[in-house]
Image (cartoon, rainbow, N blue to C red):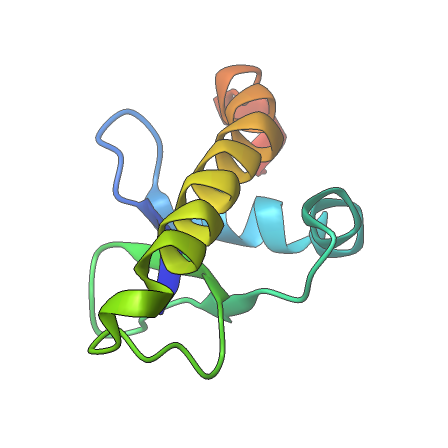
Amino acid sequence: MLVRFYINCDDLPPKAVFKYLLGHREKIEAAMDMFLIWNELPDKKGCVIAAVRPESDVDDEAAWPVLHAWLESNVARMDKVFRPLIVSLGAADLT
């Protein structure tokens, strides 16, 4: 199971945004309190940063409350961590 932050913007180059965020990886992962998967997707326009929950049996309905709580928590955490970085980001930051 994973939660991903997909970078595919029109006003700024997605690869440059990804590289900017990658330059802040330690700070971002510390704020997320987990290691993230950073995938530039070289053959695509966009890029992905993902939080992964290993050993997530989505077929086990008894586990759904725990899995839903994990998803909710990490979507909120990604929003809290990434939103301020993206909102304040400008073209001058990407040079």
